[in-house]
Length: 283
Image (cartoon, rainbow, N blue to C red):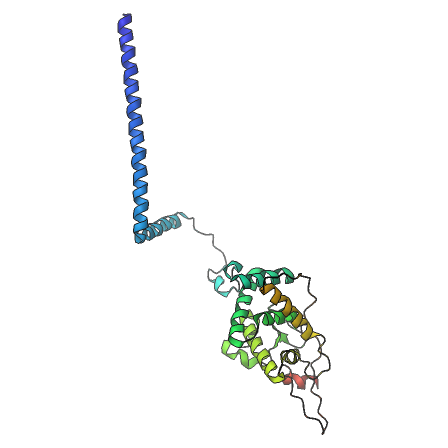
């Protein structure tokens, strides 16, 4: 009996060992086949980008179909079209540095500033004006508030006198576009060009722009703009001037300058292009 039990036990052990060895072989070979299949699939995807793209599209479609339906809201899916914002990381290094510095100093989000900085560089290229000068004027005029309005009606980022320069907004859709940041920039730069051309110099053009062409003092406006311009040039060139909290923007709070009639022996000074249409309101 004992011999029979021993023989049976040895048979069972041999059977179990054979089963284990067989399972190991099958598993080992199965994993090897899976690995080979993955390698061949990867090679095929590298050699056939169209297959990879098709697979990605199918996978994305499957994932999208598995997403739960969004909850109904009053938000518009096309609102991004109206948004004046972009990623600072998409800007060239120089422009990104300017955007981040302005964001820190004026406590404005870097994303909308990125659009303004990029637009300033494009405008500067077209008009031969330094883009940091354009940004400096916006900084002094409105501290980058696109909805700013002064007591005398200057509006938007560059504080353009909308009632004086309403014709410049016509091609954009009317004077309400003064509150579109990019449109206000383009009109403001055009006005600045006219002021510089009339004055014959940058500093003189800034005096015209702020409405102080016929005054002895511009209240330090040109100096503030040129100082901020120099700081922005340093940032654009890789230096990092301190970001001291700026004073309140100019906002055109001063009275509208009225051109004084010249004496007979004196030549008349040209009227201020930003304020000429408003002289009747202060008479």
